[in-house]
Image (cartoon, rainbow, N blue to C red; front, side):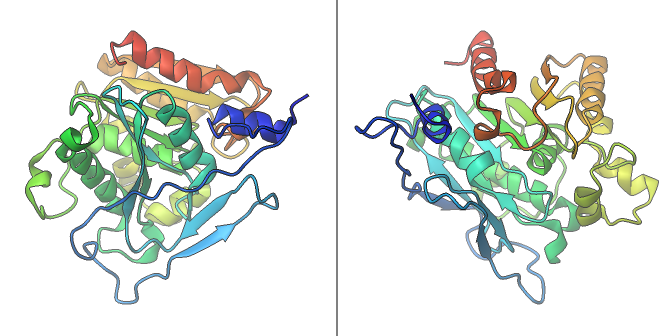
Length: 319
């Protein structure tokens, strides 16, 4: 018999120790890429203080959330043998934090075990006073895509096979990147900024998409654009209204019983993709709730979503 904790760690390629039923905690990756050559642009007068909150009571199953990110960066998961495909991952956290284990490191390990090079994004948060305001996380995502392409040769990846994935509020970062990749949100700082920020595929997972009530996730909306935002500001930062023919093919996942982010967010985004003629694969699960990532889906039909994503990318000619 294998307990649930061991099953979860097996799923995310953490592996089992030689003892039956035992699990081990993998060390964190050590390779980090700063997004900006100096301090991030638009530093607030009083910079935030980065804080890591450990929310798990099990030392073998970490659940860390990072607040006050002042040094936006990429943490790299390298495969043993690179298949040429890369993924930028934006974890969720309601725009109040970045949930790095459940919605970052676990999918990083899972896909790295299958040949992908995965870059987990520690993005700045809009409530911390950055000059870019509601575009600050998009700035980091755009810069991250350009840096990944600039270093494609170093990592053995193809610059035309760089995908983006995001969870919950990180799904909004992903959807924003997929639809507003060409919007200037920062002044170029080096040669990398001449490269395209458009992801070749996008996978918003149980994503925040709308900023308009009642679909909007109230917490994410308040931190991104303010609880008293105008309809014009809501429209400017909702993703569906920015979909066009250049939006990349998308892979969508949501649970219909999600109590936090209404499944209508995904349905509205899908409808916009279909109207624009953009290829889209959609998986809706009757049960799963919110924030399931990999570990929360274990033992449920929603646990199939990572394999479905992997199969979808292969069907599109990716290794």
